[in-house]
Image (tube, rainbow, N blue to C red):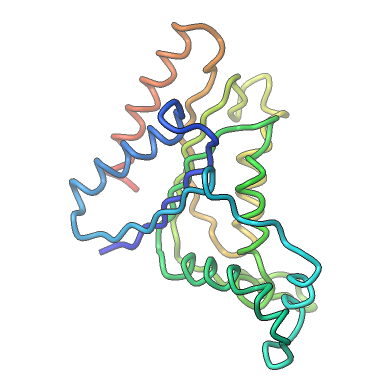
Length: 206
């Protein structure tokens, strides 16, 4: 039995391709794995706050030294990290905004990538503390920026996510691209159809 953490990050609701495909994946997955647990966060509609000066002070202090203010500053971070650690699989519905991730997802990342909780650092470098997890990213993009395309240099999705989640120990990351979504109706329909095939295929191999 797996515990899946599902994160949606799109500002759109029913018009969101990333939300739709992530939902379709989880529906098919649950058909095959009915006992799996799914924890859901809608970051696109219930945004995570950005880190503050008090958060930074708390993150680099010993909990034994916390004042009430510092304890309050990292309370949500602790909750999100506990949630992250409780799951062994992650699925993220992720549109591309200006070649990168939505700011709500960056705020989430800043809350969960935390020294002493999800990674350690010493004289030899970084050590991820989140081990033996899988991540599936379903990304919706207006153009085509996937690896191997002429516009690959503008893709700050996949390289960034592999780097930042690799830092905390999550290295088994798969991507499903629904791209070219503003390149005409035919291109859009073809891309979404291809992504749907990948979604169904991934439920058998993920």
